[in-house]
Structures are given as structure tokens and as C-alpha cells.
Length: 373
Image 1 (cartoon, rainbow, N blue to C red):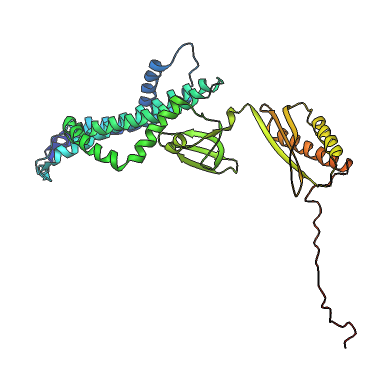
Image 2 (tube, one colour; image 1 turned 120 degrees about the vertical axis):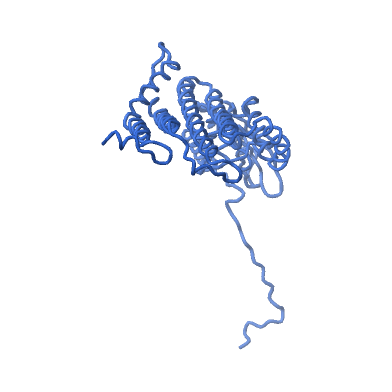
């Protein structure tokens, strides 16, 4: 009785054939995690080095999902290959047989899962290289790893797209590339700005006007470079906002890389009253020179720069070390300004803007009578 049921034919296939298909799929779904870990272990042996630590858990977290998807898809494709294609499904959709469409869909699913796995492997290798790059003082290698990780991701996606066109849709890649070369020229003109940003990204990496972590000022934006991509550069501003600047602007405009400066410069002017005697001005200049003799002040200049109708002008310029943190630099600048104020008070020198006198002259008519009622 059971044998008769197994041999019954539905849609050009026996019941036993359907059981085999369902069994293969169920076994794959139940054991996919075991199979995936085994395949992940084989891949790990190929990329792991005996003299370097290998984070097995992190590697599995990256590759298990695409491996499971690939194995399940492969099992479904193999299982359905054992069945005979039903005659009643032998029709065409837009002049393409349904069987070819289903075959192309299955091949495309396998290709997509394989490209997904390759991208995850690329991410894992990039993470390993990034961990080693962090240990070095040079930030250029960090930047190159992030850039080329994104670059090779794009290459893998393009390869996957071409494989889907070839094995999924059965089209010739050569003819497609020939057609794309003409279309690509038109697209290059249409997306000229994007192409310029892509070229600018290569200029940034090879010319190295700045790297990740540098404090830069460009296009009125002042902040720290956090990421350099294929199209744009991401900057965390001093206001803690996140600004995206096209790479073309980072290359074509004037960029101030403040991380490469050798000193911090401070310039201050004191406008003294015209009634200030030259002796007091000399004493003030000597007092300012003494104030600027501090630990982190590397160079300083104080001079009587100008005099005129409104004030005597003393210019103060000094440079501090870059190694000093910004908070300490601001405290040093505040201390110097306070000592300058004390010096002015001790020498009893007033600034030109200290006093503002407003005198109102009112003319009284000569024939006005104050006794008039």
C-alpha cells in the first residue's frame, strides 16, 4: 500500500521524489548551523596564521549568515534538480521559457550569497589589518585600509552583477561591456562631479594633505577628520556636528591642516590713551616681556607699533608649544591676559576705550529772557 502511494505520479514526478526533495531541504535547514561552522572552520584554516591570534567567535559572526544562506540555496537547487520539469509549466514569459527563468533565479541566488560571503571575508581581513594599524603612530595606514575596503566592496559588487547577468540572465558579458562603454561615457558626463570626487579621493590618499584624526579647516568648516570615503570626507566639527564635504572641495580649495602646525600663535593689541607718557609705555613693554617669560611660550615680540589721533598702539605676539593641550593653552592665555590687566592697573595706564565723554553744547538765544513768564 505504501509502495503504491510512493510510486503515484503528480505533476510528472512520483510522491517519493517529492519526499526526497523535502527531506533534503529539511535536513539542510536543521543542520545548516553545523554545516556552516564546519565550512567556516575550513575557511579559517586558509586565512588564519599560526603565529597570530585568531578570534574564532568574531569570524563566525561575520561569515555564518552568508554560508547558511549559500548552503540552503544550494540544497534547494540540488533538490529541485532531481525533479522532472512539469509539462504544464512549459510556457514562456516575454519569450523566455519559465524553466530558464527559474534556473536563472537559482543561479543568481547562489551568486549573491557567494558575493555576500566574499564581502564578509573582506570585512574580517580589514578588521585584522585595522587592529594592527592602530598600534602604529602613522594614521595613513588606517585611512588606506578603510578606503580600500570600500573600494574592493564596490569591485565585488560589480563582479557579482556581471556574474548574475551572465549566469542568471544568460547574456554575454562582452557585449554588455561594449554597450556599457558607450553608456559609461554618457554617464561619466552626467555624473562628472561624482567621478571628480572619486579621483580626488585617490589624490587625498597618495598626496596625503591630511589623514584621519587631523584637525582641519576647509570651506568654513573646522573639525576633526573621522572618515575618508570614495566620494566625500566626514568631519566632526568643534560644535560636535557631523559634516560631509565632497572630496573635490577638499582637494581644490585651500585647506588648513591645523594638526601639522608647529606652534600656536596669539596676537593682541593694546590701544593706550594719547596722554600716556613715553616712560610709562617703556615700563609697560618691559613688564609685558617679563610676563611672557613662561614655560610654554617659545617666542614672543612686544613693540610700540603705531600712534595716531586716537591712541598709542602696542602689539603683542607670542607662540606656544603645540604639545600643550588646548585646555591648558586657553588657561595660559587667560593668565597672560589677567597679568596684562594687572600691569595696566599698577602703572595707572588707561586704554583708549576706557573713557567716553559726551559734551553737549547748547546755544541760548541772546534775546531770550529768563524772567519771562
